[in-house]
Amino acid sequence: MSKKAEKAVLRRLKPAISIFGTETRTNFLLALHAMEPTYVAEIARVINASQENTKFTSEQLIEAGIVTARQMGRTKVLEFNNRFFAVNQLRALLAEIYLTDSELQRKVNQVRKRPRRTGKEV
Image 1 (cartoon, rainbow, N blue to C red):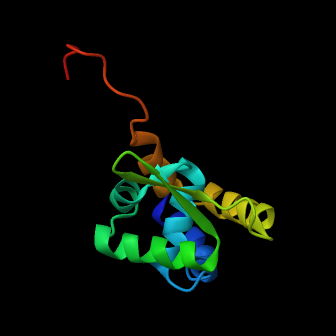
Image 2 (tube, rainbow, N blue to C red):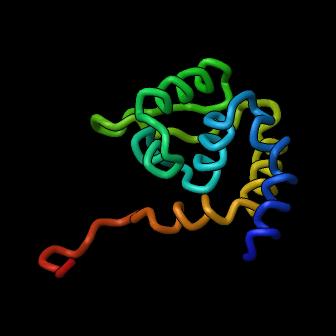
């Protein structure tokens, strides 16, 4: 994509970036949409935010009832709350925004979802 086209996309996305209050919250929701279920450290790595800030954002969204968390060993696994009244509309909106963010798509695709085979060379 050329620089000119990239700037045009960013201009179009400007309102969408802060649609959920802050850029971090919007990126958090986009990453959660793309990687669900996932955990705070993984989201923080993908959206280039501190774990502390990402954890604070997750706690706000859990308190609002948009996201749920369950313990899996020592890890808190996050996913959208299916009981949230507008979860389907939220997912549809996030899917549309996610399709326009090629940088986030690239980062999400780099996340490894399964363990490496024992003894395999790096």
